Image (cartoon, rainbow, N blue to C red; front, side, top):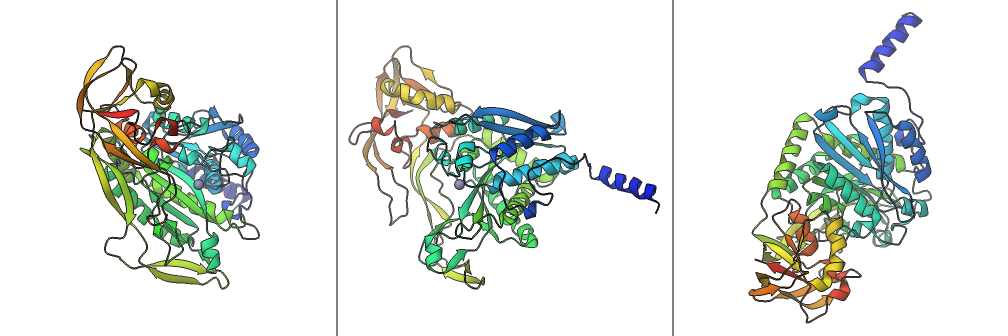
Amino acid sequence: MTGGARFASLLLILAAAGFAGSVQAPFPADHRTLRQTVSYDQMSTFLSAVARPGFITVTEEGRSTQGRKLYLVRLNRGGAKARFKVLYYAQQHGDEVAGKDAQLTLIRDIAEHPALLPEDVDLYLMPMLNPDGAEAHTRTNGTGADLNRDHLLLAQPETRTLHRVARRIRPHLAVDSHEFGRDGDGYTKKGWTAWPIITMDAANHPLIPEALKTMGLAAVASAAPLQARAGHAYQRYTVGGPPPDEEIRPSTSEVDDGRNGMGTLGALSFIIEAGVRHRAADPQADLGERVDGYRILYRHLLGDRSWRERVRKQAEQARREPLPPFIATNTFWANRGGKVIPVKVIETATGRTLEVPTANAMTDLVVKGSVPTPRAYAIDPIAAARFLPVLEAQGLRWETLAAPRRVRLERVRLLRLEEPYDDLYQRYKDRQIVERQSQAEVDLPAGTLIVPLDQDLARRAIQVLEPCLLYGLYGYPGFRELARPGADLPVSRLF
Ligand SMILES: [Zn+2]
């Protein structure tokens, strides 16, 4: 072949792959060799350089508590044909970096090879939701708040921004991106390291329609052969451990985090967690492998066209689905029948993989308490000022009574707030123990806020307002003061 012919055929190959020129990036060409995370400043520079009119759009959607920008990157080459809306967001916890790095390398690859992005996909990325925590290398944000425990109150600008963006986009598919420690105290004492380097789970909140949850779990399982082929230790995301004595379970269905927050907005919603060895000489030595594991899952969830059509239809149907007649208020993970399963661990000294049998893997979600679904919630005038910013941040619809109104009301009394962590049942602190009072016809005073459940975001309204939830608002500062043991809670149920 002559030099000219070779050059021409190279051009053909590049055109076939949709090559659009190389991009200056703060990471290596091969993401698998990445050993250092991208900083906020490096990311800002990269994003302004990679923007392409009509293809890659970078917008500032808000500011962190310390004034750093919260970026949204939209990748779209199909215009209005891109009907499948996807939102991948990362680094709510500032010291958990791999999801962000995976997203940035994905943006670079798509910028260089646009054909990697299917034309029917409208892809939105928020790679760094907690830039203050990223800079300080802390889990929490600039004011010390854990953002992934703020999806009920949306008291922080970072979570408020995420939810505002999500309500605007209404993604059919959403992924929250985290990292966990593989070498915590429990494992280290036994001479072990947790086996997986990359994990994923689907949203599991009781209010998410069953079909959506089933579809999510199927996608978690079908990623396994892809990760195995790439040589990554992969399993469904669990918390707890080590086996066989400690409990192992999927992430709680009761804390309102990003994964369940987006799930109740009507998205097929996931959490990805990569595993970090914090005690390793260089915890970032395997960052490239974690990033590769992440990218495999991000790509896997985009699936093929028929999968995307199915997810789109299922998510849109979930949004129209009527509320169930009952709301589960108390759920926990259990092992029905005491099944024994093997759990993989790595023997740290030898690097060997061991299988430890355990009956303490709790993978069945049990509903322990439910209440009938009301028609609406009523918020006492005295608590209105506390609740208004939450209703606003959640995008909920409400009415303020201008004059008294006669309604059928069920008040809910707080018996006590159980503060400590429950070691026996392994449950979070601040459990609300309540007693429903009998329904009565009452005149609600002017100034009462009424939040109807015949609204688009009814499932979010329930998550935020239902007073019978074992885990509700009243453990949070500012709301704790509104809940006195022996007195009625400020939110009542309307029938
Ligand atoms: Zn996290």
